[in-house]
Length: 438
Image (tube, rainbow, N blue to C red):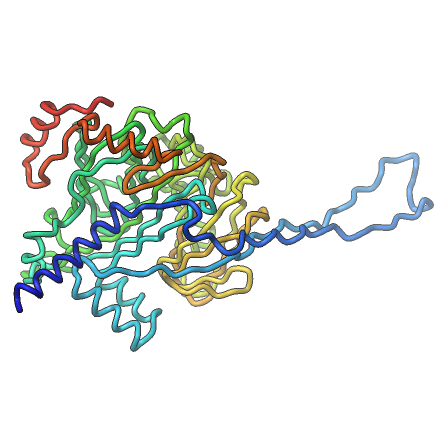
């Protein structure tokens, strides 16, 4: 009986891992609402009638004030993706049953506190281009959890070496941190804690091909509330975003860089390189972090060949507040993920853990947090208008290119995978002895 139970647990956890790292995407597999709704007609200025006897022909013409208002982005569709139990599994299972009893919004609040689930948003590339995938992780690693130590024997606490080609991964840490090692010989530690010194985002251009491992930073320090205690928890939370590259850049040189949080003030001019500018509204009601793109005249300095914006909005007050954003006219595709709290868009209330797809027409997005604190991720971009083929961990333009990518990986062109238990000097020796072609 015990052997059967262990086998079931093993298969379940393995399936979760496969789903997160090897889920194939095929265009047209799940279309996004019958094409997005047509944009609403832009508002027209009030018609004016001016009598000729009211005009002094000897002076300049009178100034006519336009009453045109910016057209708003509307909601085309909302969707709620499945939340899978992992790290720890038993808390994720508890939250699943809790959501059936006390409701999904209460379970969302509990998940924010205790963790135990991951939510992969499997996007439809033809409708959400240039974004391919969005994953929200919320986990907790307790030193007093006996199941954790059993699980570690067959299910690593993180993602051992695996290959990528043809896109950018943006990993945005909200709690805890990550250890990164790759086939280029680069090691990085980054996250949301003080020990990470503000380096909270990794911008990884996979380009022609790279192998990397991402392991949870659970050994450095426990949560602040547990410092000095015998029983501790290491909370972990992040977004990982897959951003497609244009065909001309898919075989570019791989690169991994860290972006540092950079609060802006009234005296700030432009943010320094490799930073994510952070803007606090005058009344302190919202905090906007710009990973890529622009908001209110402030542009993130990260260089990206794909025209896209990645922006986090935090509503920080318990009183109702509003956030407004002007989208570039080229950003036909835009979507929101509600991490925490609820917001109102276009008169519709959106609860937590929902994904919102916006109509392609409209200049402005207005969000209201009517019930207090909320946390939202905005992704918008210009469609690449190129074929897309995605399978497992590769994103290319054709199936032939996908097969070539896996063939190059198997031939060792991206280096050879390594055991995640290797010490740093052993890993460096491995990379030197099995160098990447790229």
